[in-house]
Length: 462
Image (tube, rainbow, N blue to C red; front, side, top):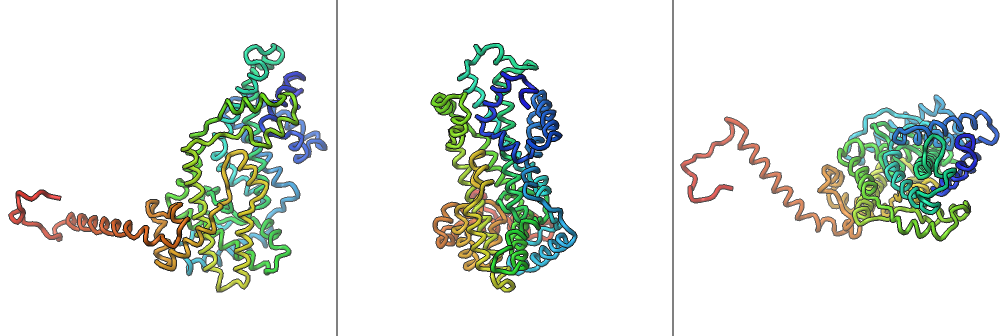
């Protein structure tokens, strides 16, 4: 395909650059069926020509990634949602909200109830994945282009290699193909996740832009097969988790911005260690594809984290754990009177989240982000302690504003949360009382008026 676009020699260099970025075109061909589908191959060739000729800020890259994600989501089958499944989703999500009303003060999300196919899940979530991953992909691709072009001779490249069709130089080609390869790997990860997730909130990140509640019937039914619990129990348990998380993202205004802001802070501060990358590339033969693939598997092109990025990732990890822990506790309380297998289902979901899967490993390698909250157990214990000491209302009130939110220190010692925050609560109460007094004083004619004659002119006013 590249030869038809660039010519034989340039295609060889482009292939090296593409595989050096971590992509595996042979795997794409196998997963998409290009080898047995000449029409699909022809369409992909035309698409590649448009991508290389375009200068659209990565739009073409992500259209290609979108296609890859849908194809991966379809791999192994993506049955359409039936009317019965759609009705099932609406039913269990409606019941979930009724059960949750007894377990939390946060009201229902209020959005539509969606039964999604795997491909539909991709459509609804890929824009958020792009926002998360694209800035990092740009930085990595540009650094890789600089290092590889230097390895191949830099400005003194032979004309047949350095000058490519259309006036594109080799570094620009490597950058474009690197960004394309990165985007397609994100698409691969997104498509793989589409075969694993149960709803729109499984990863902990707010992947859906609206307040809808979403379940993927094909994945729920596949998960329920072979379990000791009845299928209906599994449906209800997963529906309650989805509805609980949706309540958080809908009614905690700062939460979405806090989570995605931590991701953006990480991406904004990314710094590629060019010396380390150059040293790594120098130690291998850039013409040996197998060496490049092995090097990528060892993460030698991974961005180096700065102190600011470490703080952003710690903030993200803590918030994801607290979201997961709260959802666990609220779900457990909501389903306990109704589902006989609630406890083993909770533990099964907890272990599943902790183990992760191939899609999460892909995002960890590409973006450097852990999608599985490692401290979810600590967070669940913290929320249980808070509910014991303050009740459900006091627990859920902590979501009201970010400065009341538990911290990493609270995860370390959940039992001491009350002691650590007692002083903060007293200060907050004093401030509330002072604010109320000020508002009452400014309340109009009915408010009591001070007599200026009673004031001591020598006493400074507050």
